[in-house]
Image 1 (tube, rainbow, N blue to C red):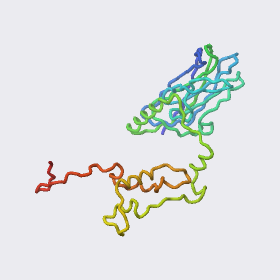
Image 2: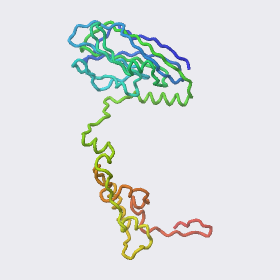
Image 3: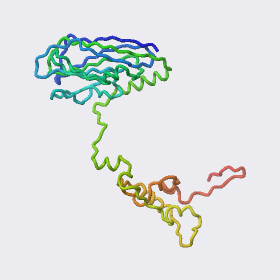
Length: 296
């Protein structure tokens, strides 16, 4: 398993931000083909950044990814100013490494990175694409020309031989992951009441859960060909379907399972009880002498 040390730079002599104050730089770095790559270590260094004298301090994002990082419709908030079209979040599958920083007039930018410096020094993230992209998103004053930006990168990559099938499937997966959502929202608000009732075990609140039970004249008596007692009545398939529907009703966490019946009643039922009888009076089968079914 050979370990490769890759040293790269991305340097821009001049660029102009758009109407929203954004500018994007991209550089492609080729890797060995047909391998599984592990990005073991990543280090970045801010060689130089442009002089500025504005009310808005510039900020930038750096993303290392198997494919070019796609700017989203989400905002990047810094020093009270919101910039649009930031890169995907660091935890997205399309991102191998991400760093953000505010430029502070050579006092030293406070670079924050993911994975952290401790984890990035011994990372085990793997990918299969035969290249990586260095992506930089610059955010500052709108419609302004800047000059002289440079960053250096060191990437330690471990390459491993894999089958062609595994490599190709990995490339397809990473290609699809690169097509990230423009807006992501994968959490939802919960109240204290909801968390208490729906997350933690029910025995923490009120002891054993109550259950309704089946009466002798309920669904189980349907399976008796002849009632075991003269007073016992038989249940019809329509009655059983009603009971199954009751068992599927949603209830509060501290109430009994089902509206009137336990939820396990819906298990192990014949198909006719689920969807109703297919045909009330099926055509009787007739067989030829050889045992084949005769069709009419």
